[in-house]
Image (cartoon, rainbow, N blue to C red; front, side):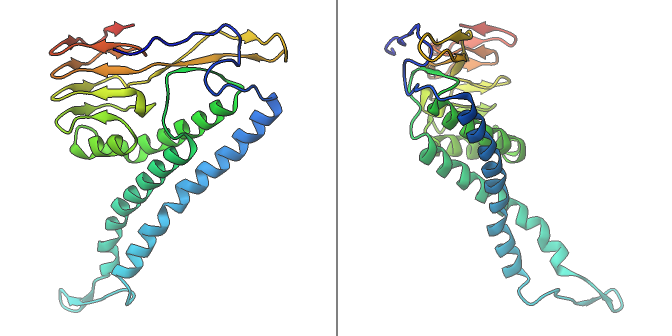
Length: 239
């Protein structure tokens, strides 16, 4: 169903795999961490604006319970958290399309520019899963988010886990994915490039397809296709 992945021997060859010096990659990732924290924090701006708008007149008070003043702003404060979740999700979606575009099957080097782009989005997704995704798994909302991130996911499917490399995943009608995250990448052995002398590992990207009515509670490795109505038991591994 999918074209075979071209496996190349030379480290740094393949899809988007120009090798950079280690100091460049280290510098890029250091700035990447700072920028990730910046995006995480900037997502609070819509929530703050929403909260300020809700209590625009300051602490609204009312005489209740024999003259006791009640601070309504404390009631409205929890409403700001869902707004932040929406804002951070929007940041994640925009970042994925700007930094990566579409994930494609192939192989890259861990010392390449494309790896730094993949790493940046992957770390952002890790944050999103911890603070937002965990609250919407197994709901239509996570289907919508993954669809906007590029996953070919049917609205009737049930997702009770997390997905990475979204464009390489296809989930059919009434399919169920749970327990184990879907990762469409696999790290390869470390090798030394003959020209640059740089030691680096490779990452292979392959699609995963779950057809209509299939259920998976086990580990699906890159390149796996689950047939219609198939069932993958828990603790199983398909390669």
